[in-house]
Each structure stands twice: as structure tokens, then as C-alpha cells.
Length: 66
View (cartoon, rainbow, N blue to C red):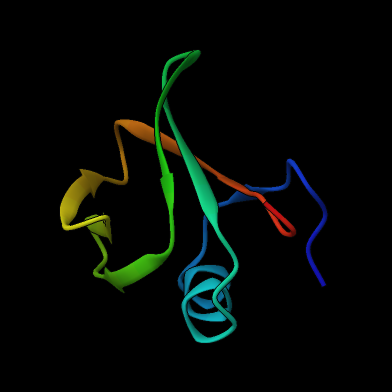
């Protein structure tokens, strides 16, 4: 389904990660900020570990098996 390191951009990808409990890693520029499970998403934000991350500022990466 997803490989380790795949970038997540689309709603369907976030939905898959949320439904199947696949962790995502979050970066701001090249700096790691967080890793966890998608709790909720909107067109503008992704909620992970009770924190909302702006989709236009952060990069989201698939981490299956983490």
C-alpha cells in the first residue's frame, strides 16, 4: 500500500493512514517535528498527537511498520 518514506499529500492518503493506523512522520523544512497517527484531517490541517499541523507548512511522510 504505502512504502516507508512516501510523501502524503492527498485527502485519500490521509484517510487511508487514519483508517489503517499507519504512522506518519512530520517535518518542518528538513527538521523532524513529530510522529504518530492521524486523528483527524481537514483541507488545511492534520491532527496528530492532539496537535494540528498546517498542511501548507509541514511535510507528511508515511512510516508503515514504525
